[in-house]
Image 1 (cartoon, protein in one colour):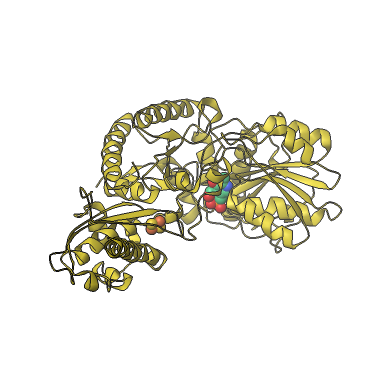
Image 2 (image 1 turned 180 degrees about the vertical axis):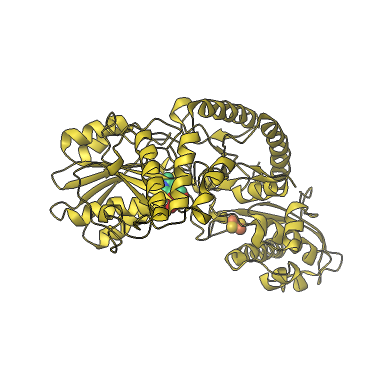
Length: 380
Length: 135
Ligand SMILES: Cc1ncc(COP(=O)(O)O)c(C=O)c1O
Ligand code: FES
């Protein structure tokens, strides 16, 4: 069966052009970028060209980009790296809607003496800027707030947060895995000190990411070794991955963002015509162009996902029933959904490869599925 | 947000996608209703009881309505099949092991959904017996 992929917040298809750009670095220019011979230097050149493309895309300098294995590692490196190189301060401010790679890093840092403030968000998912400002004390080292949320798509005002952090002299880190190439990121204009980026959410390969670290900020590396990436991330660089990552950044453009937004809004409008449905999170420009999260009430998210899957449509749910730990989504909980509402929500996340024809099909199937599952449900 | 559909076997998927025993029974003689402690999902089953033999009432018909995952819906469907035609004494012996057996297995993290089935049936039988001992 033809698959309609609406789980692009989990990961994306590698663009054919990206794959093509990577292939020579497996079989022809396969050198180690630290080697002095020709093949090594070809790899080195590709590495630095890729670094330049990524730096430029967020208004950074080349030597402020550290390549990593992805979003998880970049988030770990940002928080642990800052924490261990600044023993004089131990307070970290973050939010309740961060990705697990921030939340669990914070939890672990608590065992290492860190004090963490987990900021609440409102019913749309926004961090309250005044509360954030109030939480900053003389012990505060870092504010780490996710830019575009992976579950509900809410986009935080990082420029405003950056301004406050600058005024108060604390570092500002943002996890931009979901927003990168979809929302403008400019480290100067927005006063960003550290930014997490990754490749596999933007049609690049998996296992590659980057951390932007503003020049002059000291961080402790997680991995010690041969001193790659300015000693901040040792290990022979993943050149094919990095080349693919840079190509994916180069291909991304604002026209596609606009197109995806149009498809998103059509799909949202169509779904909200089904009775007793509600959009979770923010609307319009405050929401990632590719994110839809809907509460269907009275029918369980895993069941909706199962019926969609049986019809060739890939989705995802924050329902406890579908998680390995039987815990409901902490993000949906943070915006005030009850356990039942969380269990009855699904996420559909789009990409530039989705079409209007696909959306028509999805709406038709979704209407059928909801009718059938509501007939089975005891809650009317 | 992992996708779990590949970890269900064919029998579970068949019953989840095409349950035969879902729906309501008009004027049921007993309703079992249990909320799953693990995930908050809800299962209801409706019994029609033939009590011509006063000592040995029998389940004439049984239907379910479930707000739950694939495993819960499949378990409900099997439960109805197992209970139909049984005397209450026989039906009391239906447990989650029997449900799992009829489903040809469930992922270990989903075993609790079959327990929900067992508990809902027992709830219905208990309510019926209580009502009849009072009346
Ligand atoms: C917001 C966010 N941060 C971090 C990550 C982790 O990235 P990675 O899978 O590259 O480790 C993801 C995606 O999984 C994400 O959506
Ligand atoms: S009923 Fe919720 S996990 Fe099965």
